[in-house]
Image (cartoon, rainbow, N blue to C red; front, side, top):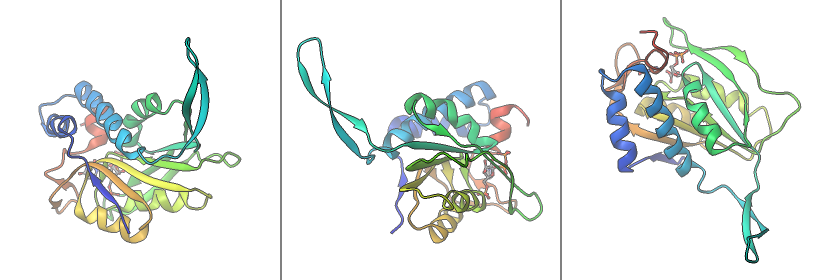
Length: 208
Ligand code: PRP
Ligand code: URA
């Protein structure tokens, strides 16, 4: 059963509104991407298992917790890179595995051009980071690659999804839960999300 989480948090919805605004420049856009990523990951990590640990305060020893899973952050280049600083701040002991996938202009099919998944390291929980889930081709390709490894959990964390992308990812990988800040109306004839925010990579990196 696919879990699709669309944040209703007012901090998220108002930040997405500023993200969509065509007058928002790259500096503020990047800041918003980071802030929304933090808020979404806070929700997406809510079910991470913990183990009890003892901690000594200045007053006494008491019970605390530690995270049980080794976490991996998998940004899909290029636009997913903008989500990494906030994600690493929140999960400072995570590994970052870079995956370069672009959407071929004519066919809209995903093309993998960079894969820095380490051969000899393991993680338990993977968070795929990509602002846009449009046709879903890039996310499906990323999860296909990740599933060649033994992982306990894979989640997709993005800013805006189209129904077409949610359908594609959940059909291909029903065990991957989807966490987004907004679920939009549809894709246009160029497979851009409507109303969306335009090109997430170009808007972050000033390449419009
Ligand atoms: C964008 C976006 C996703 C992909 C989504 O990347 O960041 O990776 O498109 O589209 P899909 O769901 O139809 O696959 P893009 O290919 O524009 O590359 P970029 O990040 O390098 O700009
Ligand atoms: N990639 C983007 O950056 N924006 C879209 O709307 C679709 C794919």
